[in-house]
Image (tube, rainbow, N blue to C red; front, top):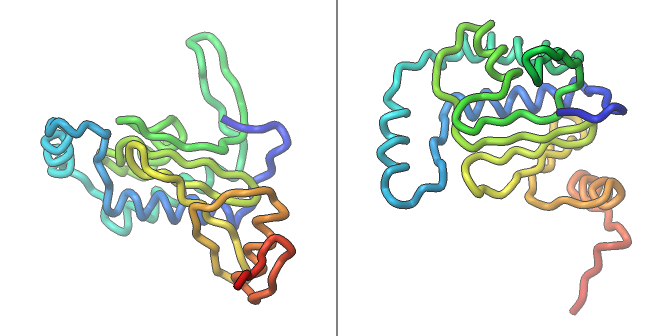
Length: 178
């Protein structure tokens, strides 16, 4: 659920919230079953009652952000309690506890998008929407911009990639051959 040295950055958490609101606005119900059962289940799930209007989604976003900006207390076992930073959010068929708690507090009632995962730290967000989907990484750039890519690398490589996107400055690992 977390790393001990993690410190949340508001800009990253705002991106996390933004991405989840987008996923809840137009949820994908893909569990990877290609036999036809998945399409039927997804169709029925999409028709279930939901109240994912903009006002409810905004409340959900506020609730989720509040939970991610401080350590989260949960019960991994019946008689135990643990407090840790949340650095991943998952939905198999039901949302993980932080997502479920934020939805409950906001009054959001809907089926969350199946097989969706998110991992984040102080430097990036990775969002995986649907069974077997490729992770899409979001790296903060200047101002309110984000570099969105499937590429991953070392902090140095990603910093150079972001600088290249922002200014066109080449790094030593970029080269052009003719």
